[in-house]
Amino acid sequence: MFKALFLYSRQFTLILALLFLPCAVMATDFFAAPNGSASGSGTAASPWDLRTALKSSAVRPGDTIYLRDGAYYGKFISTIAGNATNPIVVRSYPGEWARIDGYAPVTTIAAIGSTDTSIPLSAATQAVPAANMLID
Image (cartoon, rainbow, N blue to C red; front, side, top):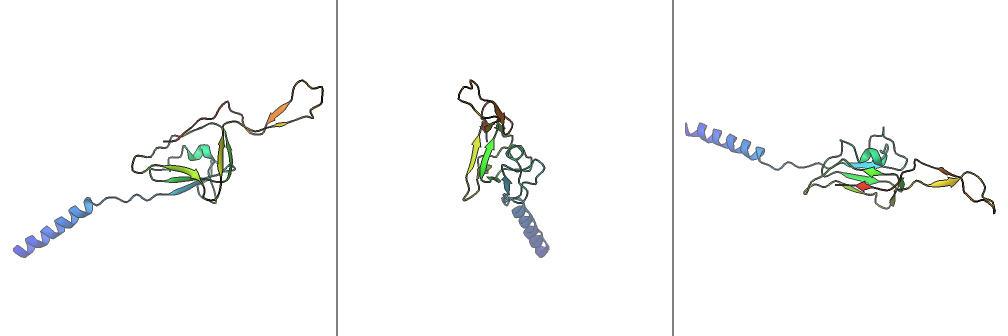
């Protein structure tokens, strides 16, 4: 009887130990690029656009979103959230420089003469009034 009680006690202790082990958070790296797509998978080979990355339900606490080299134009609002022990990190990819610009670039669509009083412009991308990037 003592032997059976000892084995039962060891099994119970092992089960309790497994239940209270801290769960390791497996962080994932995601990627966004200026030429990324909303239909991308967030991988290096198929990056998201920044707007999609900042709203993706796939991004969890502890994950990193790498921004590939280039300019990101527009207004960006994040719906992703990390926590105190596992923040979500949004940063330039190592060795590259991502720039977030709230205004769209414009180009002239006609020659400018010395007597012109106005300059006709065309937005190269969708214009927005101001930059606003919120990241928790």
